[in-house]
Length: 208
Image (cartoon, rainbow, N blue to C red):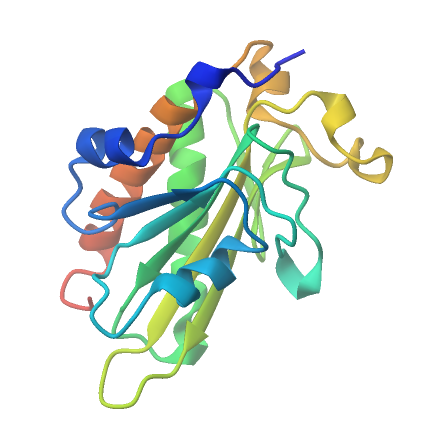
């Protein structure tokens, strides 16, 4: 049920071309596998990396959630990605980025699937009381430059119930389970990136 298809693989060039984003998504990388996209994006980023670099992984072997919890990421069935940002925010204001990401993801789900997700603070988006997406923001102080922020996002897209560990089957849900059909991950990724880009520039205009 909801098996990943070869045609459903995320393609960095196509994502970048279709996104046409001003900030978030100007550069997109897709890895087959990594430990955590938050860690991986810091490894490829450097002092000259553009704000808005996005790194996806088809599979995370050590995805992180809030308070050190493990984020289960079935290969090829979700959207697991991190965004490199340089907002002019103090580190103790990182919660503003979390709220922005949660609200944007929730709005896209509502628009694309005509469902009513709810935000459960500190970092979850839920459908029917079960977690469908999560956000993990990590900021690092930079000398004489805006602090570096990594916004990690995980969205359960095409998992069937059996793809979740037994302990999570009553607490997690995927978009495919909710809408009873397979979801096009590439199209969803583009919609998410476009809306993140638009709302980031609107909300943090002059701060980035």
